[in-house]
Image (cartoon, rainbow, N blue to C red; front, side):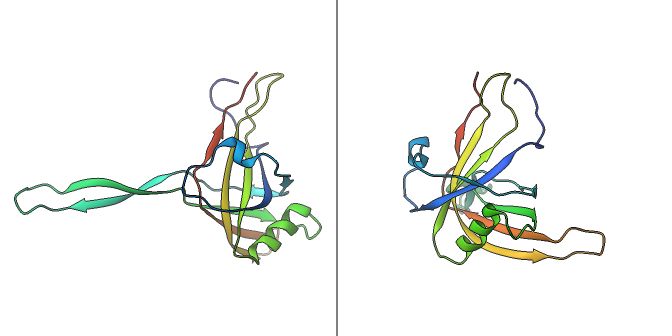
Length: 159
């Protein structure tokens, strides 16, 4: 599928606990994971690397110099309609109670006819799982914050 595509139809799944590493992850690092889809996701937020800004002001110069520092893939804020029996939500809540990083897989809705969609893989600590009540005419939801601790491994859609 060339061009733009809708977020609708995308999915996020949680895998097993994985150790952080100093090198970037590759697709093979995620093989052997069994994936559990997290159902009723309303919003996945955003993710991706951003470099820390390092500045230096030399006395003999009249312009601040900027350098790129460490990279940070950010935090992904999920909004999910609560389903107490959904195995993905159960796994997410259980993972929040641990200090471990967990594997995540995002599947986009961009598969070409007869092909496979794009995927994104990363590890993250589940920093919070909060119940969101909002106002009377809303579904009770979970707000889950995933603190991403790796690069984002990108797999393109293919025929």
